[in-house]
Image (cartoon, rainbow, N blue to C red; front, side, top):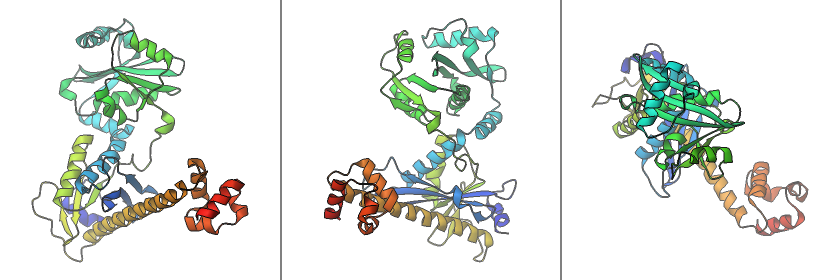
Length: 377
């Protein structure tokens, strides 16, 4: 059994039901993409595959380590923010989250005074507390500023618990409570990335009720961010916990992924599989693990690694194809972004557009646009 044979290198409590493989693909430093492929019980689960277009890589930059860190961090944050994973982490750290009691209003007032922030005597009704061994180690508050307009504020985590995503956990629970409407935060610019990791996005147009309530405190230079549930629906694959991660590469790639795990605040079993001699590397071991050439476990790891490589190349080629098609259409007078998208969705390629009949094209274009398309392609 290939899955059982693989246990010897990481000693999990059971056979790996879900294994994920990762690879990075680029074309001379352009069109850099990452892939995630999944095997469940040793078989490909194609509907669980996911691809990532790199955000931090500059045009022409080639850095597989940096690319892997970004891909794995983005993937792991989906998992960390999932309610089941969040509950597991809190339990492991001995932390409980609950509603504040009236008798704890003084604690809430004290923490806000420490940061020179005003409060009110009824804040406890809207506040969640995180406790550890009967000591308050975190809090956050949800207020409805107007009908359907919520604000998360007073987010605080004790210094002893920072870096463990406790603030994120408090915010996530409050977001569930704001089941209808939209939720906002007003924060210092330095905290933009912190809230973006949860799903908040920067906005320019701010509801007047929210702006008025924030400005009354006299705090300046804040930015406003919005969490819209419609744009933050959970992904069934990215919120599933893998039993094993397989990376295409050796010790360098493995180190990059361990950095991503540290940033995300999670630990998972991981293996690096180098192509040169199909060497297997695991954290904490300087030398590679030796597998027999005919080992079913090694074969399974190679299959996962190779499938990740195939999928990342396919995603890159698809992006390149659409980019080249799109650039041709950009040069045609009268063809705007929406029309271009309609053409790409309907005909797929320049050849498809060229070979389409006038009648078919006129379902998307007007007569003037059709004339320009025929002239250009």
